[in-house]
Image (tube, rainbow, N blue to C red; front, side, top):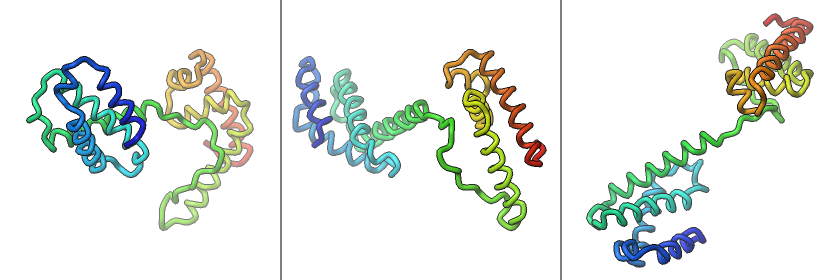
Length: 192
């Protein structure tokens, strides 16, 4: 078993007496195995590296429930599956909250064709995308950051919060940056 299991087991032994009585050591080991199976069933491959953490979270939830109401009949496979599923959902939500937005592309993203049967239109869209990236790179860094967030769909207050800037400063940088972007695109023969 992993280090997190040992830490959890030590913490349980140091807790008040009711928890230890509700789930003895052999019961904890069985509970962990059952929760590992439940987490394995609900966990998508993209979160496989987080399975031990999900099991740990589910263990804590079950132990807390047992501390409040020590009814072993409640620990059915369906209940453990539900606990594993809610632990997974909570983890996915917390990842969404922590997700960072890349302000600058290090590589050009792969371009999706505009219309599968229209190569001319697809080539035109790729040309516009290259022109926008090139013009964005020519902007001063603060304007480039503000405009990039704006073009990604963030509102000005959201961009200000992400960049830890004053709202008015962010607004000015976005509008001046968009103006510079339009001017640059016009020199390339692209009218926005």
